[in-house]
Image 1 (cartoon, one colour):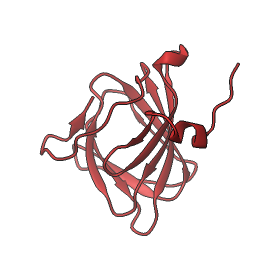
Image 2: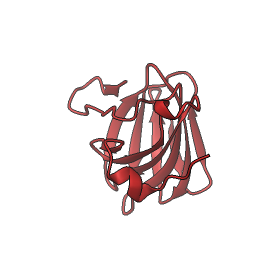
Image 3: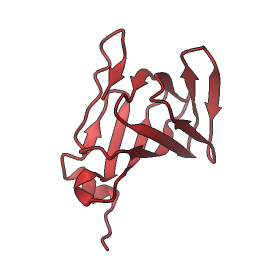
Image 4: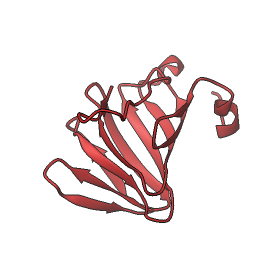
Length: 128
């Protein structure tokens, strides 16, 4: 058993600025659990085109608001208590709220190494 908190992660390479927010990779591949748990902040008024080609992801909203949009143009508002699931390596737009950050608990399977970073400068979006 172990206990880890956000402040501890901030002192490691597992605290990642990902372009439109931050990610505390609380549980990673090295922990041997078979999945990753992150505390993810999506900054207000940001839009990111994302795709996880090698991971499935589920995101549970714990604070703030935002939205996720699929490639067919379907927009899903996200608020505390909502979960969105990328069960087919879905390419998607993730947006922070108009006036507030979106705060998520993100679960990845298989686990992340913990230092992966998005590249949001291309038209194809970021993928890892």
